[in-house]
Length: 81
Picture 1 (cartoon, rainbow, N blue to C red):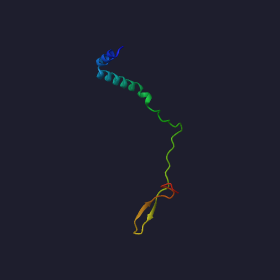
Picture 2: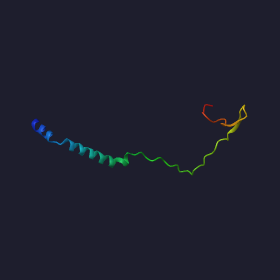
Picture 3: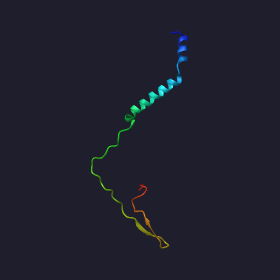
Picture 4: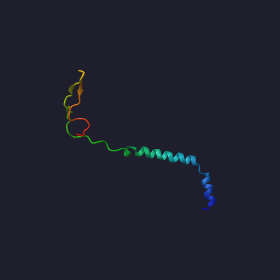
């Protein structure tokens, strides 16, 4: 094939139709592979459910003016100590 024939062939190609065909093939490939692209579901524990436990109750603190408010129990909070 000489360069003149290649040039004539490239001029005859309808590039918009070729782009539509490529987009359609991409969408079909994505629709086909979509179930395989998702990650595995998280594992479910096999043991029986365990109820949550509550921490110690808040202790009321008396302020200087006589009002009270709940204080945080000791040993909880920021985790720095």
